[in-house]
Length: 385
Ligand SMILES: Cc1ncc(COP(=O)(O)O)c(C=O)c1O
Image 1 (cartoon, rainbow, N blue to C red):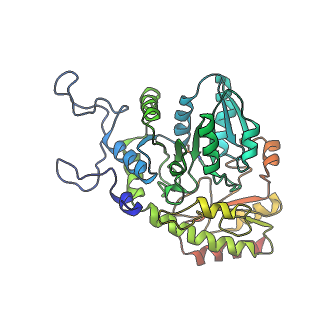
Image 2 (cartoon, rainbow, N blue to C red):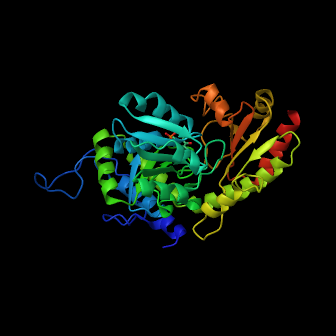
């Protein structure tokens, strides 16, 4: 089935009681059994919930996976993935991952006997250089947040297959509309569904999607045993949103390209990071790897740009009116943020400097408002800097 058709229909069927076309919110903690152990497949709300299952099936279909597991946040999804490794294992991670992922790995999981190497995974040689006999997993975010560096998933997955390593890809920035890592042989896809998948800035959620039955069995066990499950209402909200994911992503992409082109010509902007610009060092890789379901390249709605100093960046953040100053991304409304003091404040300053995350860097999440209004807002604000 086509992506757009799956977005609307996958995992959903009219309610068997009354024919409601929309999957109901099964707001229940438990289910009545006909006799001890005899039931309709549902015993307890943490273990299974029909609204959650509908969402999991829908997102698994969009990623071309076989199984999906929904969690209460993107971080809870990443934490479930950590249940696939054990004490003594080594994990290679993209050095410019979301700050919360970095914090979770460095400040929590190291206490449990796991070790991490943070490297620029956009260069395969960096991954090969830190391989150890106990390496078990490679965790890649591409494009990265906020530097929009791109890792070659086909290359990394070949290395992982050769060495029997699990490849996990955080696909939050592009959504399955513009990138489907399982098709490139990744083993697991993680999303903060808080972002593009929900897209309306009203839910915190996460999902893990896999093809392998064996990994799915373990994840199902972890989902129930650890219990970081989303509420049925949140699942329902996200499921409502996936029906328009393709339409929203097309608009985010179209508008972001126009804004990136506008910013790259502005004299007060030193540098624009957007994979859709030919000036992006990995523009060719982006065109090859980031494809919509019809084979056309797409670059998403995130743009970072260098204002030269914190003072200039701050002046811009304080002058915009239509862009809201806020963390998060991927919603219908446009947001602007300062990664060094907001989303990436938990990354130590020396590490931020090492990876090139400067104090003058500004990040925008381009919403679906009229692009002319968004450019006008930036124009007015930049004039004040
Ligand atoms: C790329 C990426 N991955 C994971 C997360 C964590 O997701 P959540 O905030 O839903 O826990 C975020 C949050 O900003 C993110 O940007």
